[in-house]
Picture 1 (cartoon, helix red, strand yellow):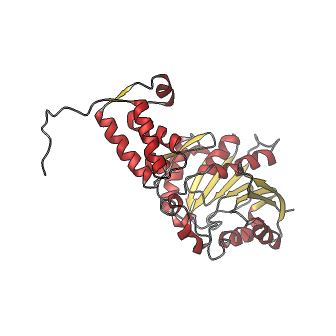
Picture 2: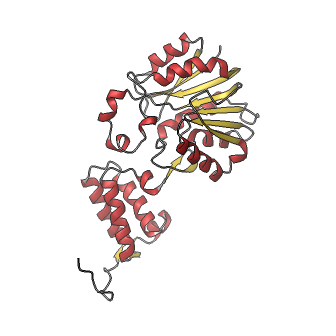
Amino acid sequence: MTHPPRDMPAEPAVTADALLRKAVDQLAAAGIGEANLDARLLLQAATGLDRAGLMRDPDALVGAEAQVRLAALIARRAAGEPVSRILGQKGFWSLDLLVTADVLDPRPDTETLIEAAIVALAGRLREPLRVLDLGTGSGALLCAMLVELPNARGIGVDLSADAVELARRNLQGCGLSARAEIVVGSWFEPVSGRFDLILSNPPYIPSSDIAGLDREVRDHDPRLALDGGADGLDAYRILAQGLPDHLKPDGLAILEFGAGQDSDVAKLMTAAGLKVRAFRRDLGGHVRAILVGLG
């Protein structure tokens, strides 16, 4: 293999706007739905320019090294790797969180649980509430909830030791470590006592459906966070049995579920003696979460 001489001229500089347009075209050709947004985020990462800088000076020149970095990032995105995995971070609620291959990519639909909790707990938001996040993953739900409940304390539980370590890092990055604990374990096993608020976004995809998921989910989210068993409801059976022993009398549990699972999840909860208080829809209008209590 031959190498270019050391004094070989660098590739000519190109404007940021030209690079952005080229990146958008490449991602669109690869079938990426949000090509404009993704191309901009990757251009910012490759060049160090922020959004304001790109808008203020679209003719800013980008040198060869940054062009090479951008090309590599665009190739990864075109192959189906999510931007959050490429950059190692994802926005959730008002927070920027670290993400890795060990955790589910936090999604806007899951913010529905935070919105539901704020409405349900109106008038109690400054109380010293006790919060439990089951299957915490990146810690997204727990971090967001503790931001909104400034005097609350929380516990996050996850079966994956790697996810637990990442959640701890996110709590630290959000300045919340003093008010939370993250532990390794299966659902309710490592916790005791009762809670004012229990949150969970459990795995709910039927096992046989996983192979047909979008490649960004199938190939990049951990199966542990996706696979809900034969009918997608395994986790809800466990949650239904454990909630009565871990909710305070006036406590609330808010659980995310998948499309069309609202009736089945509600039946499991009522069969365990829990009362369904409400359902919540996500921004797309889909029924996304159930709110249950002891009575």
